[in-house]
Structure formats: structure tokens, C-alpha cells
Image (tube, rainbow, N blue to C red; front, side, top):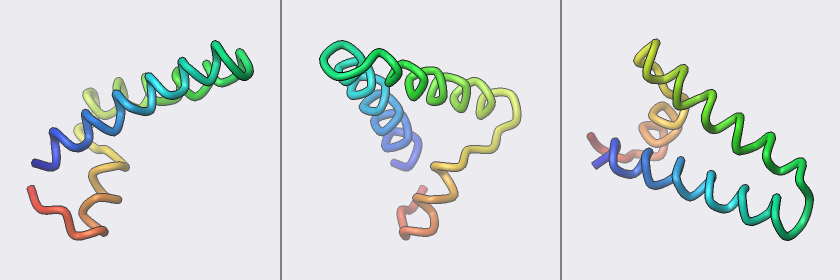
Length: 61
């Protein structure tokens, strides 16, 4: 459950930041890059900040 939620949140962040970059300001692409970098870091280190945040909110595995 938590992994699906993390992927849904990351995908939503990417899509929202792309829309913001197109319609508001191109600098929102930095947020897209930040999400991508965090996904890459998570795959390499097996540590994810969103996992800790969701655990703190009481979301079960």
C-alpha cells in the first residue's frame, strides 16, 4: 500500500510541476528535477523521505 502511495505522490508531483512550468513559470522544472533526483537516490540507497513521512502519518506497509 505504501509503495503504491509513494509512486502516486511522486507521479502527481511530476505532472503538477510540469503543468506549472508550462502555464506559470519555467522554473517549476527545478521541482521536477528534485523529484527525479529523489527517486534516483531512493533506488540507490533504499531510503525514502516520503516513506518516513507516511509512516509518521500512520500509513501501514
